[in-house]
Image (cartoon, rainbow, N blue to C red; front, side):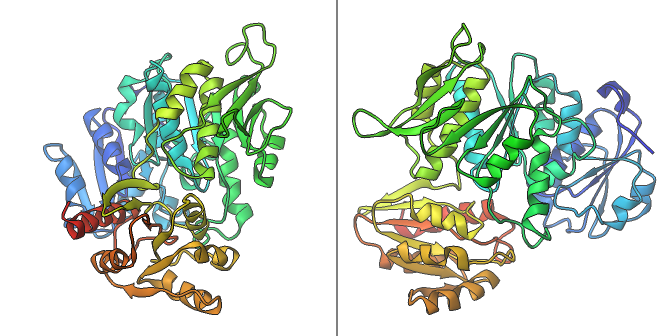
Length: 476
């Protein structure tokens, strides 16, 4: 069996196969990292050169061997290390031939010098990690951000330092790939909302959540685990972790953590209670402090809870209550997650392309106090629409994008008497229909509740294409 060297100096001369170059950063960063350290690198991907051209161009000038449109078994059996793309199933016969398997995240964690704040969950991960990173930077703490948010941390490994925290977004697949490697021990682990997702990949919710649990598996009493007190999953995590539990909730409670509460001016603020000297009063005594202001730039109760978890993580890392409160009030949100990007004739347009499950559509619709024209639908992920089918009635009007998920959704809407326009085979056509439905004071929201495959490479391309189609339609 192969293994990773104790330091990066030992990588020179190793045979490394990168399985899955992809377009979202991990494969590209891995190929660049190992090539620049003197490894003999083979990059293999089932997609062709034309599809992968942006990543291939970014690697130009480096001595790499490409095997595209196929995999060859000897590239796996003959490699010292195989770097696996998180989307590749572990049952792959090519991986079975590998001597040792790593990912860009696990390699980074082996050699990083920084304390880690790690975040996982079904929804809210990207918003939460972005708010934590923003909070560090806004408070004068140098910080680095990467992971599932499409920034491979391997790209900034050389910048890590004991006084520079790294904030990592980790998907269930990325966590699963670290099982048994003993490389992930975050100083703070944050678990956001848990709900059905990737049921086309996992056999059950329990199997899916088992991978989420790995985020705190190697923590100890010197670490913190931030859990949702309102969720049975959150309470389950808290009962299992060896880290110190910090709760967050929509309602006040008496333990350590943070909650939402009506402020003196009628607005909802976030209050925290922490006893540790590094995160609260210097004498270790608990005290209540405001860590989330009433006025936030991001809409919705679910986003307020994400911000509460982020604020709590920052306090656990020793950032003061007042700097945290100011930073959370200034946080502008994240691209593709209820992202406000255009306004014309009194209609505001929002890109929520990262809403890839129906529950996220419900959260999006619940975030607005104005009528919403909803653009939704896409490719099926083997997720049941029925539990949140009633949420679609919150929309003033619905415009459907074509796809296998939409085919499942339409009869459910019909049984409930909910009308729709479409389905449309292009975003341009959907945007035109939504624009015709919208009136001044409305919000038009792309919140698909489905995967993007078929029409787009991924949800990020879908979001960018949506914004381009809207700007073209509005002449912006």
